[in-house]
Image (cartoon, rainbow, N blue to C red; front, top):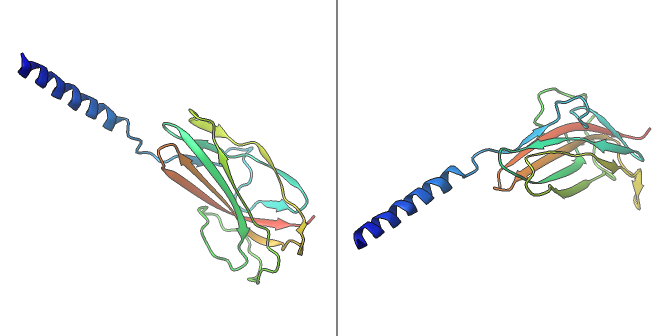
Length: 161
């Protein structure tokens, strides 16, 4: 009888371990900007002193976690764009007063598909004066609840109207 109980416990343990391994998330989340309303896309322009509607879709096979937006200058033409199309670039220049934006966002728990629709105001200046116009990167990253992440780097222009 004891032997049967031990055998049953071992079988239950092995079966439980097998089920947990099947639940392991092995897929990265996805970033989609290929639909018509998505903004920004590679080579788009954002304007100082304006508000832009940021529309990006994230998806995951199990559950999304958070996303981050990072906008920084690309005056030296460094590259971490993930897009295949090339944009017209200005001449290389030294930054004087570049615009910078970094923000983390939490995605509601239990979400597998999430579309951003937030307004981003780009100020025209700060206490040092007007922000530098020119080439910038709009860098998007998303992380799922399991810790997998995906990134998308876009080349954009930032200008004054």
